[in-house]
Image 1 (cartoon, helix red, strand yellow):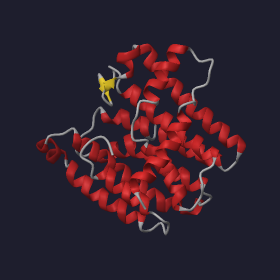
Image 2 (spheres, one colour; image 1 turned 180 degrees about the vertical axis):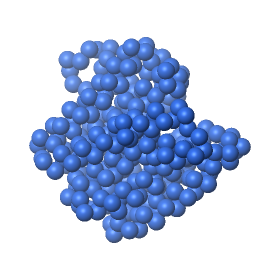
Image 3 (cartoon, helix red, strand yellow; image 1 turned 180 degrees about the horizontal axis):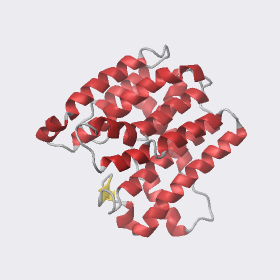
Image 4 (cartoon, helix red, strand yellow; image 1 turned 135 degrees about the vertical axis):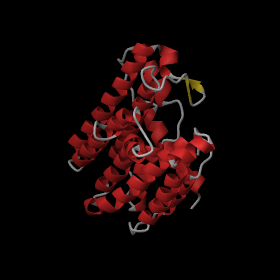
Length: 267
């Protein structure tokens, strides 16, 4: 297996679908703001995870699966737009470019995030109406992206301490990663394997957030917050969890290594 070419193939599948995902008839400025962030690069980690779990089972991704993958990326992108706002992290740049609100203003940026969230559920609802098994996928994504998941993690982050850092990482970042992985198990028709894959998803998600945190911290800060210790613990646990799936996880193991040992925000 050539990891780089396999990753690029999955990423290209998602990118091609995202190119035309915002339909005509949308306010031009809003459409421009949505596409600015949605098509502005990024690792496409979550949709790639969704598609790679299907691959691990030997299941070919359908048009429905590509829509689910795109929906998950829409949710991730909306969260980044809102996270960058002055009321949240107040960031001026993302991926080497001005953040959405710096480019289009706060009002349009808020609406772009709102639009992406609603677009995600349009896609999920469409897929669920076509094939009943995707109703479970829609439920899993909704629960993990909401107040008991990603949104809740964002709220907890404002008062995060060393004691709560692991829980915040699990909710803020890990829950949408969990949504991608576990929903793919249901899409593959392997509902009985959900808990095995959730174990991997939880460990991977926590480790991924700790790796992100480590990139932005001094060594002293990382030691104080226990970030490096937590990263190493969950990194090892994620690889161990993959062994329990009894699937072809060569690509996922390589992806785990790449994402959890990276020294930049890229891959």
